[in-house]
Image (cartoon, rainbow, N blue to C red):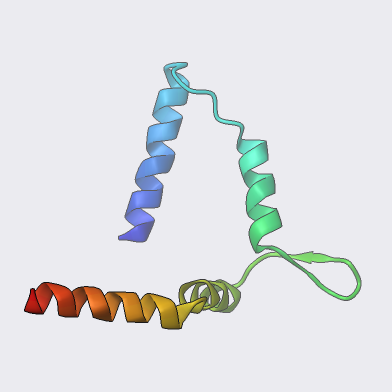
Length: 83
């Protein structure tokens, strides 16, 4: 589902760019992607993300501040259920 949405966004941007409605700076998008997801090893070489590294990044992102988020969701569900 996520791949379908991302593909759709890409096609939409390409279409709107061909109509000159938007101007997409693909170089800047690529640079931001590399700064966010590429890693640098001890020798200073930049390495592209692997599926495992993307999975670890997503897990770290989703579990950051997990306890307050889980407490909020539990309280919200309980409140909706009881109230």
